[in-house]
Image (cartoon, rainbow, N blue to C red; front, side, top):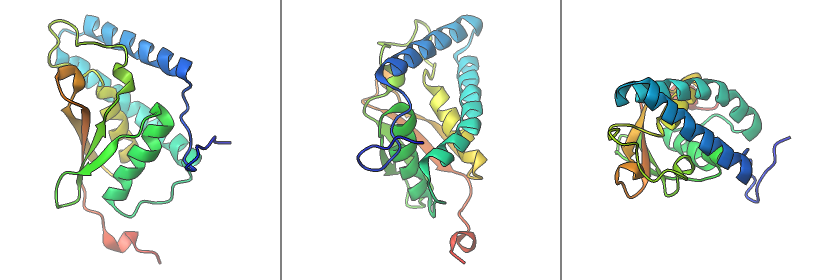
Length: 183
């Protein structure tokens, strides 16, 4: 049975204590990857692949717990990612902006990023590190599992001097209007 918040959305999986444990464990993982891999590119790829594998598995849990119906547009999909998925798994709700008139590019803007809660700066000599690349991989993996291939990457990162953390999502396939209409 899913716990719901006042707005009817599923509440976050993580309690304050377990969220802190997750964030600290994630930090230790990134630190170990930095020791194991010489280049930021290698660490970024590993974090993305790890996130992808999580997203592939997490989407079933998300669909079962959220009772979300099929989205009819990319805009609706981006809103569900921000308002339901991020809330459910990280306890935050990013804002969503549409980046292009084509309607297939969106940004998720995180005023607060729980993964960097205890991180003040990137490790020395790691200026190209995408510390939270696991998030991009998880979003990409989950979207691919529901047949919505997407390019997902950081646009802004607080750890690199950005005002916010911003994740860009570009859906790679046009929605077929014939398939989305109710029969």
